[in-house]
Image (cartoon, rainbow, N blue to C red; front, side, top):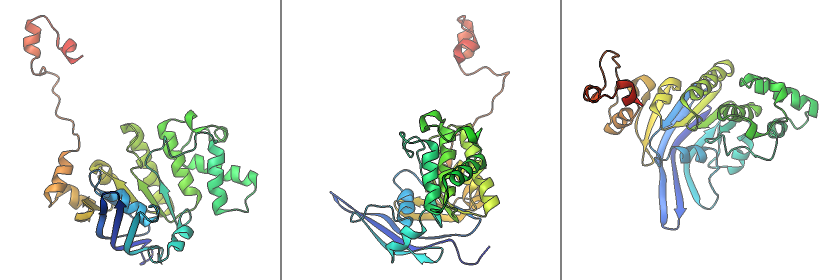
Length: 290
């Protein structure tokens, strides 16, 4: 692991120009992501975390977003030099978008879309080489029978498979840094766990740095080395994942933790509240539970 971070953000400010005036969506945040490390930005919707990620990638609309501060991706400042952002995107840094159902073109095959990503990184590759490399990537992200999926369309994939497909597209550029914007928010719990496990496995194998964006402290706790809690465009609390989850200082962080659903104790011998009265009226506890 090198001493120079893959991503070094210092005093980043993002102002959005809206019909109602200028809004400071990100207000002076600073953080780093090193090789093999996962750093998570967490907060409620509208806190500025996704805007931060899009600002780092310079994907906000030109003329509608004004950036200041410093954002160095592998040593190159993409705020001072917008051209540097175009050179590092899809190569040094790749994005895993939020919604797998809308991120892929519905009228192009899986092979066409993954192949295009591979050719951007290696324009010299032949069609046969692209298919071989693409099939290997699909296998790497645990797509079943990848050799049969090349001509499939996105609607033939489940939500979990589409998310893994997006990870394969991101990996096609052989990045050193992944930015994952709510990569599991559209998935059910079991599929979500599989995708998170895949991301952590790939990170361990490839030593990729990862910037994770999520509103779910449960997800952040599993994958993160460090967490920055964001509210109204600012970091209100930062620290190790264990510190933030086990010993939060800010009331806002404690409220986020309290919002995480938890299973309560279940005693099979104790009927649910109201079941006794229902039993006396001839209604069984099983019928009540329905």
